[in-house]
Length: 322
Image (cartoon, rainbow, N blue to C red; front, side, top):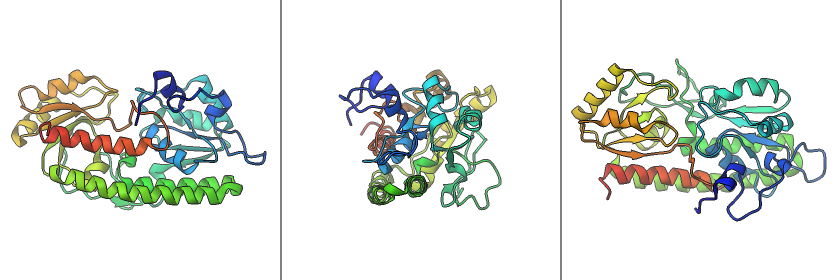
């Protein structure tokens, strides 16, 4: 996919198109007039891509976290606050990821329907791992049953969850906008069919590197690991807003050396010097993965580009640049 300019990415428009008005960027407000779509606001790009695909031909959702910003410490702009106030539907992962939205949702979007994906039925959910090193053999729990700790919120990195997000978004939109319900259902069905193909593609692409050990900057990839049997050893930090202590850094560096980790993956939103410190003396290569797709142009195709980029980044580093 061709990346847009910084202005286009910040405004959520496709490359080569003129920026829309404030109302267009926020999504059509309300559903009072014939043909209008309900105003929809989505927190992060991967979720926005799925919602945009379900709304294709009807309306365009508003994206809150743009470019290189992190949902862990994002702030709302005045135009975002206005969009939330007018929204009929808000889609987010949950407070474990977009903590900056907790108060605004109560204050600005009190009348909107809020789809909190980490609490939604039908999702494959994994517990948050607080330790620097990961124990092998953890299995995902469906619908949250059996989870004793907080949910890891990076749930979009399992295409099965993307399918469920598509279904739930279509159902929510159909209730808010019954006139367009057939279109939402048809869009969701096409999207799910494409996601099934993507899932098979990723399985084939990642299978050759499934046994090669690696580590990550923070624990953003357990859903990808669980779905495709990847061998992650640990994470430098459980919370990217909190720098790791010296003990955690030393433990993980020792593990990398002991297990012969091939790669350590940084993220573009956070300080790469921490990853450099972790890999010192380990022999591991350093590469970058982005679970949010910061450099991608927002739109219905962004989820597919994101997932393929992650697979290619993993394969390229784990196989030594092959």
